[in-house]
Amino acid sequence: MQGGFTLLELLVVISIMALATAGVSLAMRDGGEQQLEREAQRLATLLESARAQARTNGTLVTWQPMPQGFRFDGLAPGVKMPGNWLQAGVQVQQPTPIILGPEPLIPRQSITLTLPQTSAAPLRLVTDGLRPFSVQNIQTSP
Image 1: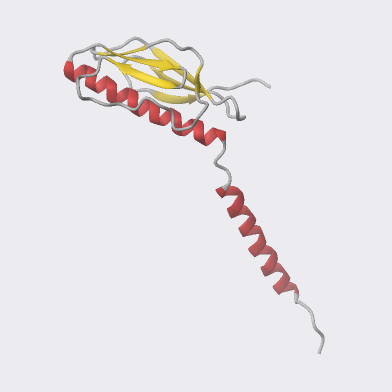
Image 2: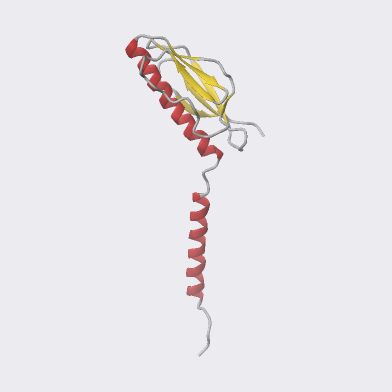
């Protein structure tokens, strides 16, 4: 009797290794793109929440980027909103205040977020003044 592996056994082992490699690479894929996407989605949600507060209370609410985060001005007393990024190093390219209310129709506005220490492409949060803020990819030229 000869020792050794059959072709079927070798194919099964190679298939298992390929699946394990694919699983590991997907698990490690949480790079800059996904981190920046999470930050942009979180900020869009916070902006819409502050916008709703401005309309409800009839007060002028603004969002202002800061060197290490951001702040909301004009919220009702006792309303707490986060003021920091979850991922260190997120930057706003045009650090100008964003007006969020009290009017239902606000000016057209956009915010561009970058994560410089990664290869992530910048993301832009935009609103036409009526619709909620949405996240858009910015195409970069090589």
